Image (cartoon, rainbow, N blue to C red; front, side, top):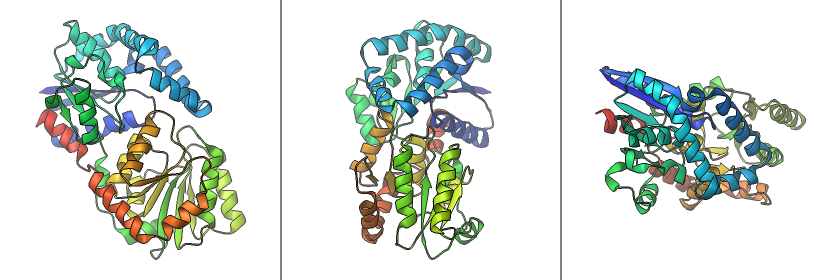
Length: 374
């Protein structure tokens, strides 16, 4: 029996979701594989994990521009050196798990997992194959540390493949499969039944609005965009997901109450029905995290980008904007005009949908697993 271990880290939810999708696909399609999913940072040091993940969350929420500077400076110089050195030290603990489990293949959806395993391989303490799965639309140099000891790099698009080539990574190691995606986005849903289950009308355009955000970033801008949608005179209806942000949910509900828009706006705190909701939507408004971006493209949805975290999310937003599948609403933009122009231009919306489907890689998870285990 082949043994596979998947490492992720809890700096944002996308790394876990990518790892979970790979695990589910392996378990469903490969009967002779024993697979584990492990938070590598939680395993090597609970205290370090808690401090660093909390610091990331707080900085992204309260000082996003500072986080952006950290993101860029961690590619080279002292911060990059500190990060790489720390992972070398922490790899000693990870080695115990690897010795006990003896994996044939290690898949990492976070650069720290790849770094620790590559360092152990360099020391001759590990002979497993290592696969790095990048979860954004632009590479960061932390993904590429000790790349000579990594056997596979999975990236979101062909442009990233060229970028990795320019960093000296062999073309034979790089696969532009796309970011791992839940199999639920491959299913077909009954549109009328889904609309009915959410109390939505079949004769209106449906806008899916992710308003909570993992860190509640850009609250005033989020509410401004939401208000413009609610007040829009076009033939639309809105499903707003506030996530863990209870205050934002309250603000949304108060506005809907004040404007008497209950029939056309549904506010949800949390839902596990995102694939179903995307299947009935015509447009998504969201922060451009790697996972949500991938899900939106796979669903053929044009994207209105709001509140990207400086660093990786701004790079994602740039990629989407350049490929004409998204409109990025910046801080001082006229939100009402931008949305009004978009909703009144069905030809533009249709072209954005076509481009989204052309960019999407719906079979990404299956393709990754086939390359590694087929």
